[in-house]
Structures are given as C-alpha cells and as structure tokens.
Amino acid sequence: MKKVLILLNVLLIASSATLSAQSDSAKKAEALVIYMEVNDYVVENEACLRCHGESKYILKDESMEREITQSMCRDKIIERDDYYSMVHKSFACLDCHSYDYEVFPHAYELRLEPTFTCLDCHGYDEDYAQYHFEDIEVEFQESIHMSANPDNFTCWKCHDPHSYRTFVRDDEKSVTEAIAYNNDICLSCHSDFSRFELLTDKDEIDLLDTHSWLPNQAAHFRSVRCIECHTSLSDSVLVAHHVQTKDLAVRNCIECHSSSSILMGSLYKHQAIESRGKLGFVNAVILNEAYVIGANRNKVLSFAGVMIFLLTLGGISVHIVARIIFKK
Image (cartoon, rainbow, N blue to C red; front, top):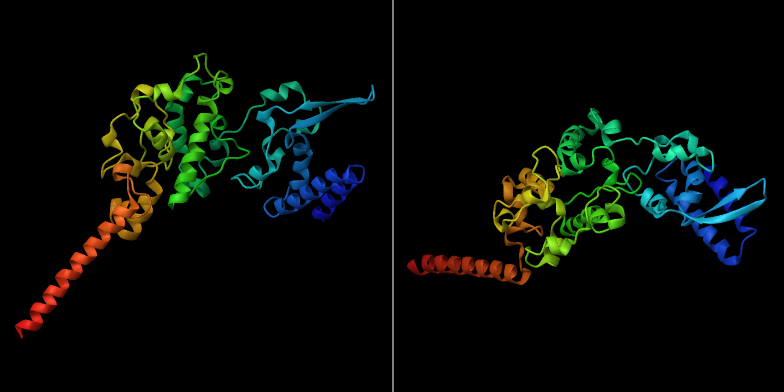
C-alpha cells in the first residue's frame, strides 16, 4: 500500500513538471521503493527529506502569497542512499528528533535540541554487549576531544548518525576502504578549517607540515588510519576511542614495522582475532593479504620465495628417494 501511495504522489508532482523532471521523479520513486526493503518509514521520512534530502528548499508565505528558494546548509543535507545503507537505516526521523519538527518552518530553538549519544540507546544492553559501548564511553571521556571541548563534542562530531557505517575488516579491499572511510572522519574537521574552528580557537593546522617527519607520507596516509598513531591501544574495544594529544602520538617506526606490530591490536585486530581462532597463533594474520611486517610486501618476491622453498623441498625429496633406491 505504501508503494502505491508513493507512486501516486510522484505522479501528481510529475504531471505538472517538464519531461526531464518527470524522469527524475520516476527515478526517485523507484529508489524509494527499494528503500522500503530496509525501512518501514520511508513515506514518513520523505516529509523531512523533501527538504533535507535536497540541495535547496522552498519557503512559502501564505499570507503574502509568495515563495522563495533557499539553499540547504550542507551539514543538514541527508543523502538518501547513504542513510538507507547505514547502521541506522531502519529508523524513522522522528525516532531521534522532536515531533516539533513536523511544524515547518521549524522553531529556532530546535537547533539546540539535545542529541542522543551512543550509550543512550546501546549502553548496558545485552544485545550490544559485544561492542563494549560502556568501555568506548570511558575512553571517549578521557580523550583530548572531550577534555578540550566538553560542552560541544559528542559522538556525532565524528560519527554522523545519518550515514555512519561499520566495516568488517576481513580482506585487503575492506581494509583499504575502512582506512579511507575512517581517515575521512578525522579529515572532515582537521583539514576543513570552517568545521575545525567551530570547536576550537586554535589556528588552522597544516597536516602535511605537522607530519613532515613521516617518511613517504602518501603511503602512510593510504595504509593506516590516523587513530593508529593517535590513540592508545585497548584490549576490550575493537576501535580505540582514547584520542591522545599530539605529543603522545606514535613516532617510532618499530612500533608498526615489526613482528609485534601495534597494528595487530588496532587496524588488524579483527583479523588477528579471527585467525587466532582458526589457525591457533596470534600473528597468523600476517600470512594473508593484510601483511604488515615491514609494510612493504612485494607479491612477486613472495611468489619467488615460495617457489624456491618448494623447489628446495622437492630437491631434498628426490635426493632422499634416489638414495633409498640406489642403496638397494
């Protein structure tokens, strides 16, 4: 029934639009039907997304019979594809936001509406015990982010509740995606001064300059997450949240480039846990594509090494067999 209602609404809009607009409306209708597979509140959410899902919106003054088009603030634009593919994809907007938002234009004071934290929904709940949200909260409270800005820094400064995704880092591709995704979270503030200055009075930071000591910066930024060097390790939390001051950042190459790499307790923690259960030893993960010792694995040399080993083993076997045969 909901699918029919959406299609009818789209057709009503399209009937007074241009051919191009009709095509866009049809595509949007098809997308909404797909979203319904994961969310029961698509129709209700469109009441919000018809403005917040677009780059512009219309303000109407009924008494003066006029209207104006305004640009939607970029921080208030919700991408439908992102929203319906993220961890909160089954939610209705009003599950988290005040019902006062049903009135448009919205009251100004709603901009200061208190927001939920992760612990408000996930804390002390056996269904989410495996994620250790309580331990995450303790780490977050001790982080430089919280101590530097206790009144304004919340979970959502890093984890947008409308688009946040998680990655199961179980292969080379997903590790690469996780690195890029997590680093983008940090860079959204630390490389965008318009956002950075909302939380601090510090001057703009030149990231390339502050990391000038790091050899081959591009390779490091591409291969590890910021938090690998800027957080303390945690045994209970899969992704560390205790962000430390820059003077405590890792600067010793051996910390990562060794058989006891700290990356085994952070970036490759999930893989290390999995391999430990399957293969029975802690660093079994180094046998797969997530090789970190030296961080410079060459697949050609790896193949050559394996072939040399097999040829050597074969030669020894032939020698043993030959001696047994000729001894007789």
